[in-house]
Length: 135
Ligand code: FES
Image 1 (cartoon, helix red, strand yellow):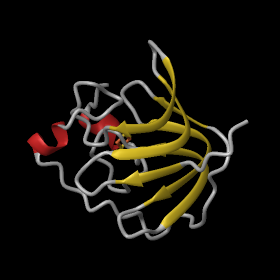
Image 2: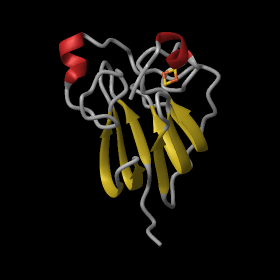
Image 3: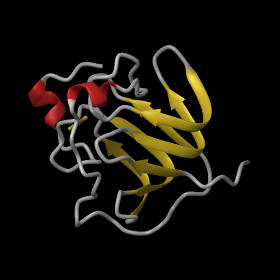
């Protein structure tokens, strides 16, 4: 088993960049990756991956975690990320989420927004249903 450190960095006005021992599960493929750049604006044509569309649409988010997010580091092992149909990225396994201010949040299970509309980014708050996100 790998002893990689799994870190998901929230990029201001941009994607989530995950590094470590990462598995991305899509309906068509299971990919083991060391780095995955995941769309969080909701408009990539290559979902769940970023294709740079956030720049074209002017996606704006400062990449700060909610103040009540768990703090800490939890990141050794394998993390599996499964985009939910028309919904968030489901993350299972040890992962440290790091915001633009260097604040860390530890999790073993998380639903991360990929529609761009959550009011509690990087976490999903159910807004994807209200805005009819597809992907
Ligand atoms: S995926 Fe954006 S609020 Fe759920």
